[in-house]
Image (cartoon, rainbow, N blue to C red):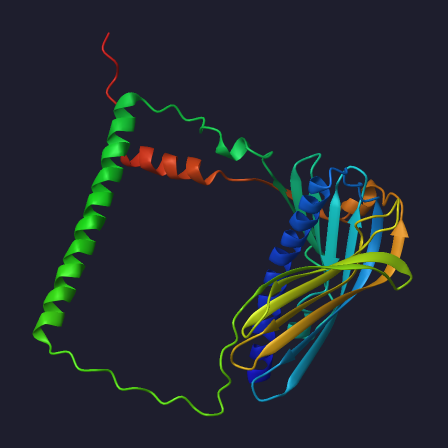
Length: 312
């Protein structure tokens, strides 16, 4: 059980960190392209299959290995499908492929699994910036004044509570004589912490799995530290397709994990619209993306007394 927890915690940590670092790599590459005043070549439509391998090393030296399949597909209009069997090692049951399709044309995110409940969830995503537009509810000046008064009262109460806590802590410190804290001896076998240093390294161009690819390494060295390396196709006409990547995390407590992702099969060309849709016998459940600020405003309006009708 302890081994499963060790592997599970590291797997979640590495996956989340890898996504954030991959975004940093893309930003870094975009900045380099902009600095050289060269337009970035658009990635061609493709479908790629990857093999992912995760090796976790626990504090006792034991290793746990997990392998899963991943599929990525992009068309010329920017639709992107990602699918994987990540997490199946937990249930040890029938492999389940989980799908996610982002459609920038229809502004939707769609999710489903095969095998599954024959149901797909489609979330309507607001175009960039529209979630920051004012809410459609009409707020009268009187209601706005009442809402402002509510917010001010809450802030004043919070400040008063903090001040009371500070005074109580000061009284407690004054009534109890302070004694020096005992010095804890440092075990002689404990390795000294290493200074962390940011890494953003261009690895140049080389041939990987038969493809010309450009690599970059980014992350933080030291212990604890995290390093992500990614290689993207660089030949004219097929730039930007991932060929290989790796993410390595080294913890300060001797727990480490490394995930490698390697291209198994690549097909260039339009995948077709059917590729971005759930099976025909699946029911599509549509959901609208919620505006958090509008929901909060509605709650505050419901807590207010009825607005006074304007004077005639």
